Length: 178
Image 1 (spheres, rainbow, N blue to C red):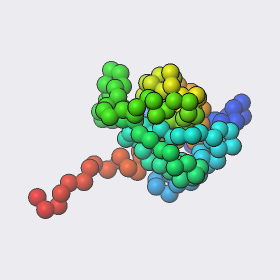
Image 2 (cartoon, rainbow, N blue to C red):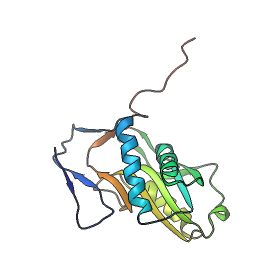
Image 3 (cartoon, rainbow, N blue to C red):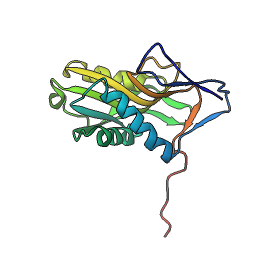
């Protein structure tokens, strides 16, 4: 497996070659920390958002880490459900309450943060939600897959593999006293 840089676009990250159906992209917490610093630097060199809008759940850690790395304290959350399991998803993504009051976003430069642009439909939904009120919105993700309908503005890495994120690989914890 080799990584290569897409020189045609300064905001694009490495492309993963040789990905087979059974292969998995493994992200560790240590790699996550490095990825967030690199992604934050790429964003801040090009764009200074007023607010980071994290897509829950996968984008929560990304939005928070980018906020710290970029010195942006104005971080908000929007909750979208699309994936229900590995390779299982709803027909279309849906926003879950509570949604941010669109007035709060009026005239702002917003960075929409998520863990992965897989189909891109979640990012597309959130961009559409923001479209009428924000001054400008851009997207930042750790990973982007070739099939994504959204081409993110800032991407740490491109892959066509299933991604094992350190926060979602293991099953949820259960009470030990039961």
